[in-house]
Length: 92
Image (cartoon, rainbow, N blue to C red; front, top):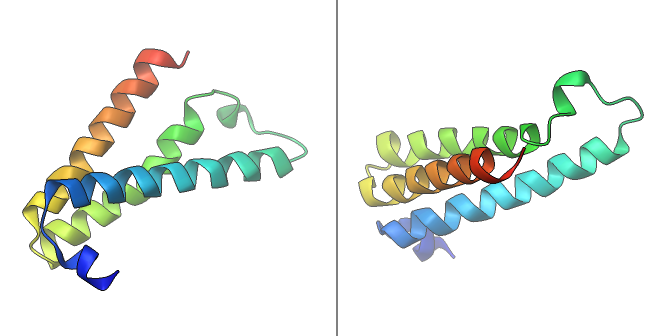
């Protein structure tokens, strides 16, 4: 597993991006289901997807600045753009 994160490949960034986004989206979904009163800003169906992308920005910065793995960072950025585009295109 450690070797996987040391590779500087575009595919590694894409995998990390999609895995973290999907895990955090399902975590947000569980938290929203547990709430008795849902805040107004969480009623929009796009909000959990966009909140799930926030940690990807920090992971992106970590790979680009601290680890100097540009290709992995590009994969993460590609994932962020794909998810944002899909959310705004398909979810209303």
